[in-house]
Length: 328
Image (spheres, helix red, strand yellow):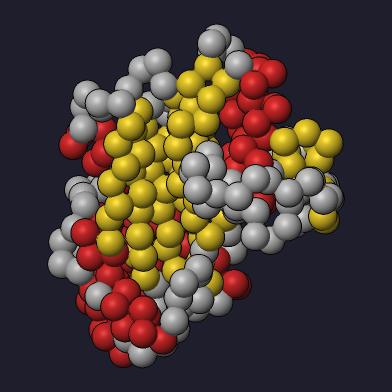
């Protein structure tokens, strides 16, 4: 009888251990071997095991980060989290395109974007007209995420998991006072809560009426900014008169809801033409952007555009190396 009780108890404990192992693996994303060791070292206590894993990952991540300082990070993602009046667009870099497609890395970019958005709202609860704030990687690393961990800590934990150098490069925090509204888009669009892609833009606009039609057009204008890369909205008085529109084939751009193969569209103007209102509209090369917005009674007030990896050089890499090591 005593022997029967002993064996039954052992079976129950083994079952509980397996159950906790599955829960810990699902919650943290760490390998089964690491989760098993964490539970063994903490008497099968889930909470203590999770903390043990985080501490181990942080220590390993800092160690790896120090060893990876000289590695270039030309790949990565742009992420955007936004609502009608606030937006945060961030860039997080990694070494390879393979890691940029990794679910853990994408989750990291999502956390960074959402944390920056929360910071923007807390820091500027009543935006005046249009506000644009740029954060460097070191400043981003000090921000505290929803789990009360710094973004720098999130980065080093992910370094331990993906095995590459990761860098918080930059963030643009945009806010606009009502009735101005924001729109945002990344290309290509992913299914994450925050939009992720290699390109991103945040656009501030005003309209005679704010409805589904103007919101859809604002999204198309974001698509135009990504595909045509204007550098300013209107021409200055010193700019030469616009040249006739010459259709050119531009990059294939995917909008939300479209198939991933994208659509080939025509842009307008020569390479020297960077004034948005003078450009042929990305989705209708027969009309300029000025024609499109005038017809819809909408006005582009401002925009910010990110392209992942733009402007990176060996020299800038040395500067951004500090980002992954910023203290929390």
